[in-house]
Length: 115
Length: 114
Image 1 (tube, one colour):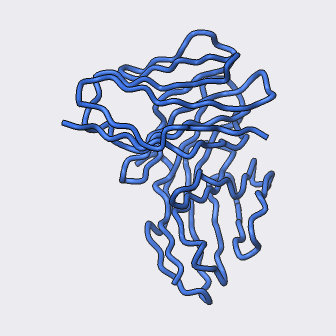
Image 2 (cartoon, rainbow over the protein chains, first blue to last red; image 1 turned 135 degrees about the vertical axis):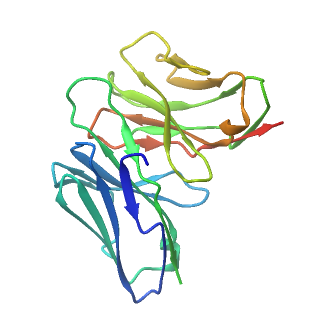
């Protein structure tokens, strides 16, 4: 266990379903991230949250809706997805910029399949 | 925009031998951080080694070391005495600093042959 927990580990959903991915960290980190990892592509940043505020949205379609109720929890709400959205969704966290060293801690990801 | 390039999609090495994975990056920043991450089939992204751009000394972590060439914007990873457990996808990554995004390369799949 790395300190960043993602649930569920696997998810199969239809294109008309609504589901949510959950990410939780108790490392005291202040920043949280969603990344999408597709086959044959670099990891794509989706969203960045700093102190619960969204600071970056990397032109993500509105069918992906993030929510960060506090610094320890991050959700990704999914609705009317497309088959090309099938991928591994990784959550990460990092601490505030005070002192060295710092790093990013990743969860094990949610493997999403859209049918 | 920052970019990270890993020119070797796949590499293989014999157990106990040494292998070097290449990474180049592009940035206009003078202060930044570089990482190598390992992702085994378990999907867990594991930090292998970190380098601060302001440090001239190359980082080392046991069998893992880097060759950081700031002027050339090159950041290669050397794995010595390769072990079967080193087999994984290796990603080079760049960031301006904590709370900024990590930009990843496409990865290099490392195979370790017994």
